[in-house]
Image (cartoon, rainbow, N blue to C red):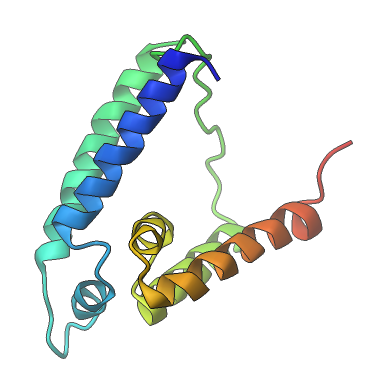
Length: 142
């Protein structure tokens, strides 16, 4: 990996991780309270999500106009537009896991980096699921 690419990846990851910590997204209790509108509901994560969607929309619009990234690599945007059972099932599984554990992949890695106990179980299980999908379900193309 070249130095510029590494520096951009490192800075992006650091900013993302700090944002997750500052927003409370790496705190499972805060996430669970957001997902419990009939209990101790905490709507503050809705603002975090709205901000993330706004940033994502701007980034996607910029990426659509460019053919190369800041590191000079070709930008490849998704082309799929259909909603199928795999998409719905994956979304349901992701949402259920997020609701039960109070963690999703990004915050789980942040929580793991500070030794948060549940992340020590969640992250290996997440990696096992990724492995299972890549090598069993998706079956790599020859």
